[in-house]
Amino acid sequence: MRTLLVTGGAGFIGSNFVHMTRRRYPGDHIIVLDKLTYAGNRANLAGTDVEFIEGDVCDAALVDKLVARADITVHFAAESHNDNSLRDPRPFVDTNIVGTFTILEAIRRHGNRLHHISTDEVYGDLGLDDPARFTEETPYEPSSPYSATKAGSDHLVRAWVRSFGIRATISNCSNNYGPYQHIEKFIPRQITNILAGQTPKLYGTGEQVRDWIHVDDHNAAVHLILERGRNGETYNIGADNDHVNNKAVIELICELMGAPGYEHVADRPGHDQRYAMDSTKLRTELGWAPEYTDNQTGMRAGLEQTIAWYRDNGQWWAPAKQRVEQAYAERGQ
Ligand code: NAD
Ligand code: DAU
Image (cartoon, rainbow, N blue to C red; front, top):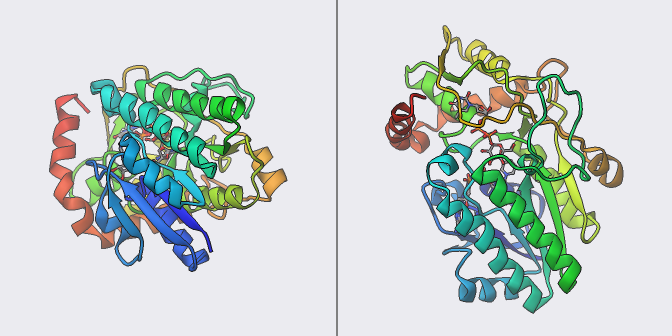
């Protein structure tokens, strides 16, 4: 039986991680530390018996106390939305950089293990016609305040491994989708637009490519890394969906939901063009493979499940819908 400290466990990926951990490792004790920002929701953890602590990963005294009790800290907490980082970068610097520093110092004092959750965006972007994929050796070249702060946090983890000998692993994953994702993000925004009788919104031409992965496939990889990942290593996570552009995703959502169409809106400034992950290391070393796959878009089954979840959980997303859409409308999006 392990004690896991899950930071950001009331957010999208963190809460799905908690649910998966409960299913697969019922004996584990789970402590969730979450600030409950606009992106965190206590209801995401309904039905789980976690020890829930509302607090900030930048609070050194609190973090020290919790890290001391945990065999492993799984660090999901972050400000996570690119569009918000363009409007107000400060919380991204605080949570993503100072928060990770705070966790690292506690890990250094107590000598227990850290797994740091990061993103493919640290590698920058690829040209639309570039067939390359990001490997663990690709140099960092982040584009937005969000990805720059995530890159900074990865560098801190690596420096603490090398300079102080802490025990840590890092995973960099591509774009997730699935239940409990905040409706500011691309896929749930379009699903809830259709459910609310509004028109789906595509930024610019919609040619951009994201290497979509279902959140359960991401979290299954994280569990494998916790069990068998080598100390100090980085693992890229991606489901080989780097041939699917935003236009194809929105068209598939419209088809699955019987919606007549979508509209083009203002593009994101500095919009990254293409992400593509090479997850060979994870697959060969740890034996990981995604379960949500199909030949065409790799997303049909996962999207059907996700659409059904939003359809069944209107009370979860409806209260935030008007505020989110108003903020987008102010930016022509
Ligand atoms: P999210 O925005 O849905 O959730 C973030 C959670 O962190 C929320 O519950 C929020 O309340 C909490 N939080 C924010 N600031 C905090 C603070 N200072 N102290 C404590 N808790 C705080 O994000 P997500 O999409 O679930 O992403 C989780 C992690 O995965 C992030 O580190 C993100 O960079 C990474 N990631 C996300 C994706 C994706 O597609 N969403 C892909 C790869 C990596
Ligand atoms: O690549 C991993 C990253 O994926 C994570 O690190 C981030 O936390 C996560 O938010 C996500 O970042 P993106 O910026 O790629 O995700 P987002 O859902 O905001 O947008 C996905 C794509 O869809 C992007 O090309 C912009 C576009 N888009 C987005 C919205 C919200 C639209 O076309 N219309 C929209 O309404």
